[in-house]
Length: 109
Length: 211
Image 1 (cartoon, rainbow over the protein chains, first blue to last red):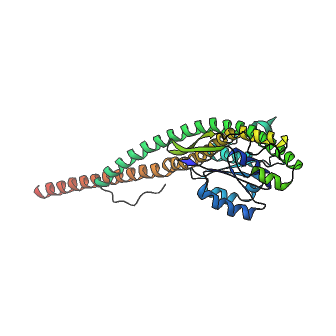
Image 2: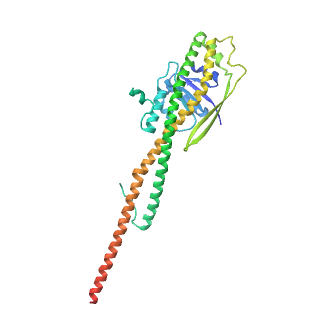
Image 3: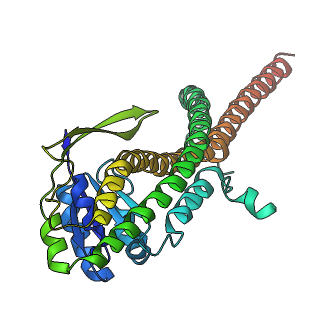
């Protein structure tokens, strides 16, 4: 199956990924991002989303969690990561194993 | 534990014993499956985290570099320069079945166009070149991360589900069936004993009459 990639970002800094073969879209706030994501999910297999936007639309993201495609991956925005991606990893670890095996060691030190 | 609502007959007893056997076998299988998934999950999640560390760093770098480039050019020029991709990337999407979980498998086929950059060098500063080059490099990692992160999410979901099933079997289904089996066999024994005593009683009454 052939796939397509898209990136949704806040601000037009995501335009750079257009040169790498993705389609870039901008959304300034969560409502427009939500609509955009819903539309894109039908057509694209891999969607990248900046974590600033992802943080506000967890409920929409969880709709796609159980399906193989589309894959929605959160990326940090220009101002650096807000920790959303790690938070998700931590949550999954807690769900599956009952404990968080990734960040716990750090907190001990 | 609640006893099931069944008639205490030999027929039911036989059926229940067969069910108990199936439940125990299912429990063992599911438990093995969960254990294996947990093993894989803990390996994968570490890998995911390391990759995410790298990717986050790289992506921020790319975006910063690009915003630097943008600073040197007008918005219109930038949009013009980046509106046509020069690399057409072909993404191949497939899925692999790992322990009954459909995990995505991505592969990237890059078919480069004539030039490395999507614009002519006349209108764009060298800052943008760096950004574009970095973006191209980070792509493979991005897709790997997408694949891994989806795999962790799906495995976590599946582990949760099968853990719940194992617990339901272990703490509800199997004890219930065992209790019902005990109840039925007691009842059957009781019936047999009462039949026996009745016979003995009748026999002694007949003997008394004959004497």
